Image (tube, rainbow, N blue to C red; front, side):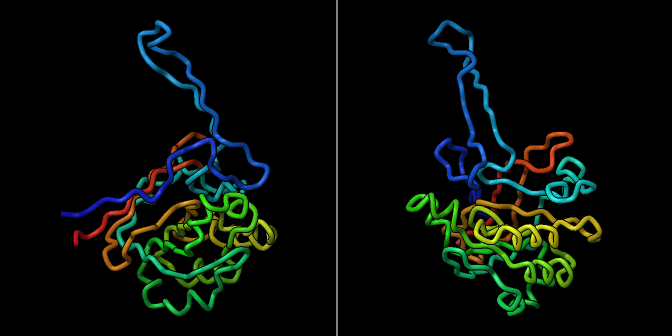
Length: 227
């Protein structure tokens, strides 16, 4: 029997964010203890908060939104988890990815485990302001040389390193290019702790679909082969 593991985080107002972005806010709308017949909450949620998925529309005004995409764009039957350790401000390079070229050409989802996710709790400010990123050259390689790839998933805050924002923007442009035959998404702020790469069989990433909105929070679940 397969084993299932959640890779996305719970939404929490204490979560680190890209500097300057708003955090999630919760307020109770109705309350049984106060005499209402049910409990309900109002949630104010920025669409790039927490574990979330970027679509083409994030950086291309003529690009697809998540709700424009076919539902099978969010189901990955050939995921590839790579361990590429990164620390503060370091970028994943094209050469590091080319070392796995044979596997990448068959993968439909690349998951990069940098190990930086541990900083989310022990150093949330550093996680927010000094996280790693993926270089423009590396993203160009993925977009042009890995034709089956439908997504890139990361165990840190953003594809963009905050200290190298222009490089990060160009990296987004490479992966989310609307002219690519197979549309790609970027899934940011995940955790791959405890996931054995050789047991990973399938990943499903279901975003919140809102008409006209570029991106959205998502729930990501991995299917693992039982030990």
